[in-house]
Length: 548
Image (tube, rainbow, N blue to C red):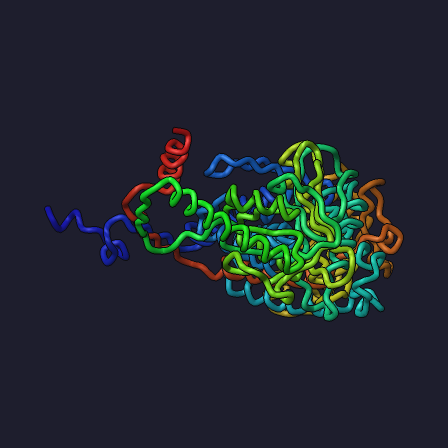
């Protein structure tokens, strides 16, 4: 009886609860289907007319966006093969900051075509070999499509910057790209260092304030703090700034002591000495030339009283990261304890004032003259989800600026590059012999999803547009792309739709690598999930506790 219940095959050598899937139907095809499902989700969000997705994550936070990187981040994908595509998208986002959707959708298309080849009888290793050859060739062709003269650019020339940034921003906020690109270009050019390759993304801050509309958005050369000044002084011009990380208050000792007081006179003197000490410290700061005190901790009532007496403006910044940025903006050196700062430790602001924007009181520190390393884009919008989406568009613009500082080459956008690559790869496949040619041909076919998806999302006839693109490219016009406003094919040098070469290059590489990685898997062995409370159950319990 005991012998008959024993499991056979690989199950006999594994612990109870393990799952083992192998073979084409169980492992390969199932993996491909999971990846196809993921790419179907993101594909409809591709391009300027991409649809939004409403994602509610495990913490009940709502996201309404067409940004693929945010969508896949919040989806918490569990399937191991689909996770490979998510990792490829994250790598693209980390490298360029744009093109995550292209990576996932292209990898999904490659796997869908690979499934057709597998059903025709090709072995996955032959498909991988063909895909690898095709991706190497595609990179070569992509270099040939680079617009001549785009290798050199002046990263401080706003017109050139906007022309390269427009396509990336338009895919997030179609119709508003001109306003956003202008804001982002101004902000980036202001903080661009002497050597543009050292451009730091953290130097362009985004401050989201509810109310108004995008046309009310502006650039502040300096910082915007979402807090009011403490005390009655709300404005200072051309002031020196002292920054204290520990707070502006009477210093408490580390050890506890007991003071024995015998009479009311002694009690009064004790209070007076404390008062005199605080006054002495504040007076020392005022005499150093500082007009503004910034505290990283609490500000005591008595200290505030003396700050008012010596006409000092007091700000409180609780976040240490925000405090560091403030020091970068003003050039101040943060002091640990309240004491007289040396002239070298003081920072400088042209003006610091409390203003009311859309019912919110904010403190704006401006440094209009040189030496400023931070600029802030103040975004206005009617709802939080609109502001979040605008923030992602600005973020894409800033990332694109960083990418163009390293490599400013551009290729035709509006699906012109994809169709040209598809056409050249098909010619290359026809010249090949062996079974690889089928895989190369399918790789070329996969590029067609870009014009088809762009046309579908805009409500045009995808087949007609793809056919007319092929016709145009066949007659030698390599820059023929889709004009999504009129639904016809136009030369991209007229429509001014250019994509960064580096965005396309990395998307192509990551998508091909992800597809080949998924195809290389022929067995899946899954352990039984560990015991203990599930993550979502714990999160739900945590949410319940918060509500109490």
